[in-house]
Length: 121
Length: 121
Image (tube, rainbow over all chains, first blue to last red):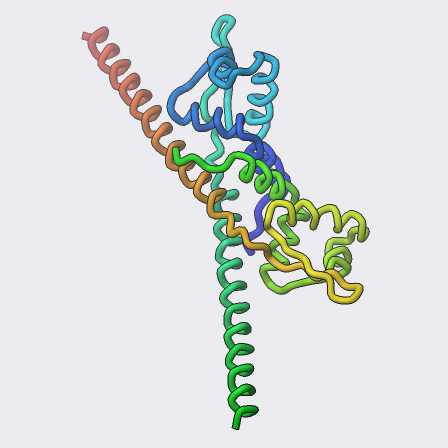
């Protein structure tokens, strides 16, 4: 398999392992939003939302900028290229593996049937 | 965006957020292996490897069966369909969002340039 930077994948998959954080990314895919907006939208305290945004920021999935007293969030620089690549490779492997197993099962079934035929004769 | 089962995605992305666990999946994509084999391969104690396999098993990414005293691991039933789907949608959104931003920047640059031209006249 292609080698990906492990620490990066660790951080981004961990960031994606929470429904609220995935929701925040979906929201920011539609439009930028302040932390206050996000907290309201996801029925969460400001402190809770700040933590989630922090996790996303460290994973490069969100960037924030402070204008006056408002901190606005937008999608970060990472396009999840490596993550999608890893999943794609895994799924190809999975398909190959299950194709192999299917062949083995088919062969066993065929052998069993010809055994039965022999016994009947 | 298409709605995916949140708990499932939480569990699978969390399972993928560890380099050893991703390594185990890559290994099982090549051939089945016992927990002892995996522990050796990843320079880990049996207890440590059992924990990792447990996380993968709960996420449906690995199944294990015990024959005599050996517990053998193989790839589980989940093909990471929803996870790949989520990432794909996100990346499309990301592209659209950055295309939009690029257009805004282009427009601002054009306006700035025509302002400059006006001032020079």
